[in-house]
Length: 366
Image (tube, rainbow, N blue to C red; front, top):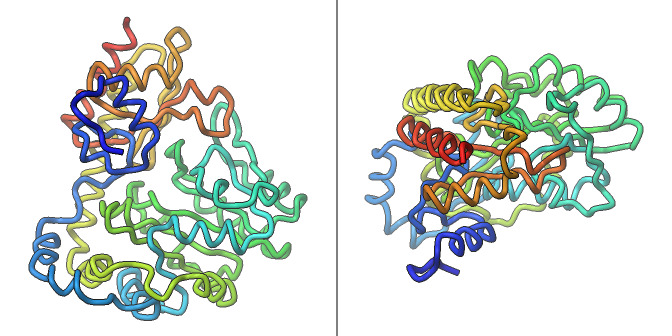
């Protein structure tokens, strides 16, 4: 359903809450979805336009060729790679079809739990109120419940916090002898400081019980194209995932993007640097709000706990939309204590971020 001019702001808000995407059509400032606003460069979009007829009228390549294209980007052999229609397609396969029992630290990206049969899911609460993942306790619980797949999102969504690389290596080694595969979701890692040093992609061959998942849609700012990939040196697991992928699972625009991307490596690095700069200014701006607990972010969004003397997160999110035409994500649907006291705020460009801070100050003082 589309928004129309006859709806009040409150009615628009209620409608948008039921939707997943398409926000750009509706004329509000989106601080909910998590984009890199500085990529792709206009040159890539211009090349799409020039090749429009071919991209629309012809079949794209299939999985073997897509894996080879992605391998050139991440410097990995194609047999280790499965390319998905966004990471969401791969999550659906891993959680919903392959895993017998998954364990997921929560709060986290809900899709890992949502994609799996309820009886197959163990939710492991993060330390509260720090939201730190104790990997030793997590490993013990994974072994105790006989999980065959453990999921870790780093930086985590919604907390925007990294799990240290050494902790992840220790976790993988603890799980290996218990036939538990560790899936590490690095979708937001490019927005952390020195991502090339903290990613485990280049060390994947050392860990036969590890797979890395990456949503390119987020890091490369291409939510509408939908590309994600899985990387693993575990050939048995890679073949299992690939066997569930349709022969043509991504479109010609996604294929073309993979072909063009190697020529724009420096532009991508520069875009992530700008995202980090804007995010840090947003973080410091939010820290100015009296009573707000603001968690230091590693991704392109900021996780906050509202002051105790203001309405809950759902009410604040709605008021922000009604008064200022800005949309943020409340965490009411997350598995965590006091979930409706928390907000996840996507960083946009500096001017928009500062307007958001001032709008929140305006609402919270009432």
